[in-house]
Amino acid sequence: MPCDAGGRLIDPALDAALSRFAVQQQVLVASDYDGTLSPIVADPAAATPHTVTLEAFLALSHVVGVATAIVSGRTPEHLAEFVGTNENVHLVGNHGATMDSGHDADRVRELARQLTELLGTHPGAAVEPKATGAAFHYRHSTDPDAASAAARSVVRAVGASMIEGKMVVEGVLGSGDKGTALRALRDETHAAAVLFIGDDVTDEAAFGVLTPPDISIKVGDGDTSAMFRVPDVPDVGAVFRRLHELLADGS
Image (cartoon, rainbow, N blue to C red):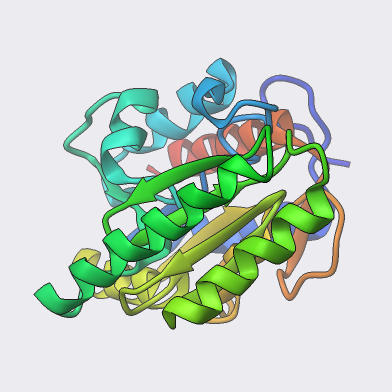
């Protein structure tokens, strides 16, 4: 079984797909952040990137013919705080959603207000305001089931689109998702093939717009439409390092 430069095993079928991907004239390599470039942690504010994995990703951003992007539920500003600014890396936040009008901004504020009100009856939960909505994190809630149900009720009442991730309920009032964001990035970068890797339910929208020679990779367990799967964040770094090797061999 093939290995990357760090000695981690790469599934032969994935390695073959990476080889086909690497010979394309122009490619886009895109990644989620939480659970992909950074391990999942109890406090979302402490989700610092896995150093080796991030370094492998950023190394690809300097390869001729490779465009890179991070497509995340985080805001672009939060992503910049975690990974720094790099003109070669597109930072796409809010699950790829964009605001439709100024009227939606009022609804965004109302969504955040109502979710914040839930904190009084659901200790341990937290609200993360965003440009296109708000996320209700209930990982530390004293009653996670009740907290998530209350958040879902608020999101429905406000009329926002609902995104459910790992111990988080998010209301989004903008339009678009990670799939539409990936399509736009493909057009913008003129990519002949796209690789996207992610770990959460929200990443399925991105997986769904990819077909070979594109590559979609799910991190961890759970149902998925992704073509391939890797176990954990360090294995994401292995994929990036292996791709870098293949690109170097073909240069």
